[in-house]
Length: 366
Ligand code: COI
Image: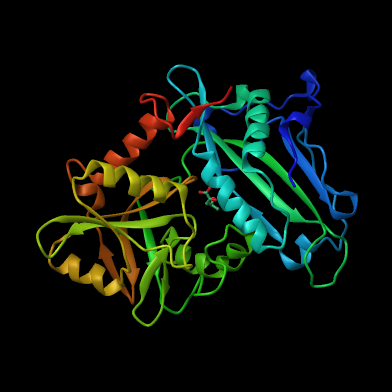
């Protein structure tokens, strides 16, 4: 059961009432929205998925008892479209987002769908709002597919009706005013996810409960929380990013390591892309393994810790300059090298995304 892009109809916004587009330099993540949105309803009683539509951007109206508002039956995705050097608009690996979205839907008791059909609908939405895809590398159009349970009943049960919608935002840098590097707070008293939980699902309920700890981090002058897990203080992820560590291994060989997909972290598309690219480069070892704070400290003491950086669709690649842990500030020399790895990866991904390199990961929308 799925909706079909062949059934998609569009109702376009009044050309006299289009929103004004912000200047690229004023872009702030998730603050500006384009003129249109995509919507498709699911109603079990009506046979499932209804016909998809593109309509002018508008508020959504929900029953006050809608399950999303009470039991957080919500999940989302984040992917981007880029305006290439040749003027073509490319989306980066949308198939991976569709697979992840269907997994989150299944785990939320919400209806699944054919990801190929949603990609086709999103391509159409982006075409309609193509003027909104910013010019200039470093900026892009952020695509936010969202699926919510909308039954207006308070029983704690899965929702028999749902709304899948997608909104678009022109975006620039995610972390602003950080001079390009970020500092993290790693405090073992706080936990984001646990084995057997849903920390590897892109559900809104993974994000809402983190703001108390985020506030503690901000108060201490750290931009983000590095979430730890277990008695050995394993590093997991940053909440908005997966995390990578580049270091010199015991045998003198360089290693790029990132925590494994063990249920505690979000399976990031950028994370997977970095692993695949670096494995192809064969310039150093790539390992998915547990990394503890003790590992970080030991490497730092031996001067073998080279870089730590975060990766995500919104955050792209963000170098980490320090980690506050148990009252100490561990400085990380990420940006201190003449040719840092994070920069090489960032540039290579950008070359694919902005069409400098033709690559199957970034397909132009037709
Ligand atoms: C993304 O990178 O797309 C994310 O969803 C991270 C955050 C903005 C929630």
